[in-house]
Length: 67
Image (cartoon, rainbow, N blue to C red; front, side):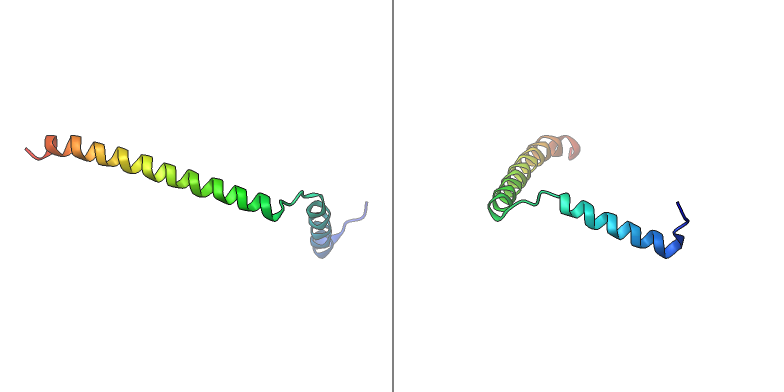
C-alpha cells in the first residue's frame, strides 16, 4: 500500500469516522426523554442522600469539636 502522506491520512481518518457514524444506533426522542428523566431523578436522590448525611454528620461532630 502506498504511503498516503499527511493529508491522505487525515482524509482517510474522516472517511472512517463517517463510516462508523453511520453504524451508530441513535436514540429517538422518547428514549432521550426517558433517559433524561432517569438522570434527573437519580441526581435528585443523590443530592438528598448526601445532604442528609452531611446534616447528620455536622450535627454529630460539631459538638465534639466545639468544647
